[in-house]
Amino acid sequence: MDLVKVLAQLRAELENLDAAIVSLERLQTEGPRRGRPPKVLAATRKTSSDLRTVGGRTRD
View 1: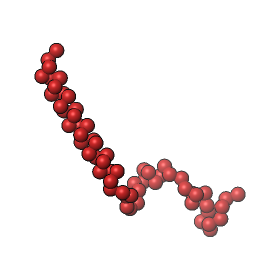
View 2: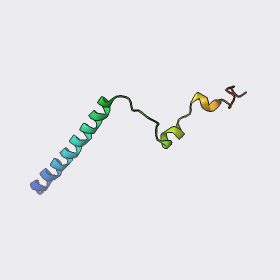
View 3: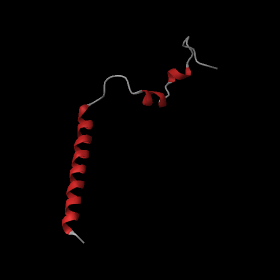
Protein backbone atom coordinates (compact mmCIF):
# COMPACT_ATOMS: atom_id res chain seq x y z
CA MET A 1 0.00 0.00 0.00
CA ASP A 2 1.47 3.31 -1.09
CA LEU A 3 0.67 5.72 1.70
CA VAL A 4 1.83 8.75 -0.28
CA LYS A 5 -0.72 8.06 -3.04
CA VAL A 6 -3.52 7.55 -0.53
CA LEU A 7 -2.72 10.85 1.17
CA ALA A 8 -2.62 12.68 -2.18
CA GLN A 9 -6.02 11.27 -3.15
CA LEU A 10 -7.52 12.21 0.19
CA ARG A 11 -6.19 15.76 -0.09
CA ALA A 12 -7.63 16.07 -3.59
CA GLU A 13 -11.00 14.79 -2.36
CA LEU A 14 -10.87 17.24 0.54
CA GLU A 15 -10.39 20.13 -1.91
CA ASN A 16 -13.39 18.93 -3.95
CA LEU A 17 -15.55 18.68 -0.85
CA ASP A 18 -14.51 22.13 0.34
CA ALA A 19 -15.44 23.61 -3.05
CA ALA A 20 -18.84 21.89 -2.97
CA ILE A 21 -19.51 23.16 0.56
CA VAL A 22 -18.62 26.72 -0.40
CA SER A 23 -20.90 26.56 -3.44
CA LEU A 24 -23.83 25.31 -1.38
CA GLU A 25 -23.28 27.97 1.25
CA ARG A 26 -23.34 30.67 -1.44
CA LEU A 27 -26.61 29.33 -2.80
CA GLN A 28 -28.12 29.38 0.66
CA THR A 29 -27.18 32.99 1.41
CA GLU A 30 -28.00 34.57 -1.96
CA GLY A 31 -31.75 34.64 -1.40
CA PRO A 32 -34.44 34.22 -4.02
CA ARG A 33 -33.40 34.14 -7.65
CA ARG A 34 -34.64 36.79 -10.01
CA GLY A 35 -35.81 36.39 -13.56
CA ARG A 36 -37.50 33.77 -15.62
CA PRO A 37 -36.71 30.12 -14.86
CA PRO A 38 -35.03 28.05 -17.58
CA LYS A 39 -37.36 26.46 -20.15
CA VAL A 40 -36.62 22.99 -18.79
CA LEU A 41 -37.91 23.93 -15.35
CA ALA A 42 -40.84 25.92 -16.69
CA ALA A 43 -41.97 22.99 -18.86
CA THR A 44 -42.01 20.56 -15.94
CA ARG A 45 -44.09 22.79 -13.68
CA LYS A 46 -47.84 22.77 -14.00
CA THR A 47 -49.75 25.67 -12.54
CA SER A 48 -53.42 26.43 -12.18
CA SER A 49 -53.13 28.69 -15.23
CA ASP A 50 -52.51 25.56 -17.32
CA LEU A 51 -56.02 24.42 -16.49
CA ARG A 52 -57.70 27.59 -17.75
CA THR A 53 -58.78 28.58 -21.24
CA VAL A 54 -57.86 31.82 -22.96
CA GLY A 55 -61.00 33.51 -21.65
CA GLY A 56 -60.04 32.75 -18.05
CA ARG A 57 -62.82 30.23 -17.47
CA THR A 58 -62.08 26.82 -16.08
CA ARG A 59 -62.61 23.77 -18.23
CA ASP A 60 -65.56 21.50 -17.51
